[in-house]
Length: 132
Image (cartoon, rainbow, N blue to C red; front, side, top):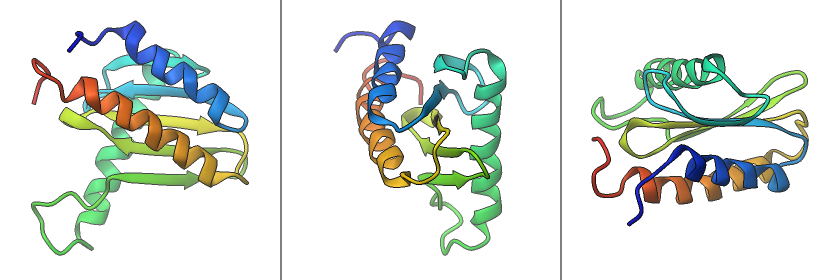
């Protein structure tokens, strides 16, 4: 399998723009907030740090509701704001995907686009030579 590059990740994220209503941006980050790739308005370190922080805090906060403390209780989340909708997804090897939309009506379209991108991203992130 080809090695993963920032441009490979960015290509997958760019395709979200055509599938998401009012696409704001997307970022793939490590669990500690290191940017692997970002597109749209989500450039720089702040969106990656936000994705990592949301991922960790939501997981920790929901863990008390789970039945098994060793099994993650959160694989994906839709987060609604007044004028924004975010899709957060845990990816392979501890990575996270955050996708934003300025339209809160079509949550299903955002979720489907995020799930499709996640499948493609996981093929590379979980491939041979990827960190555990």
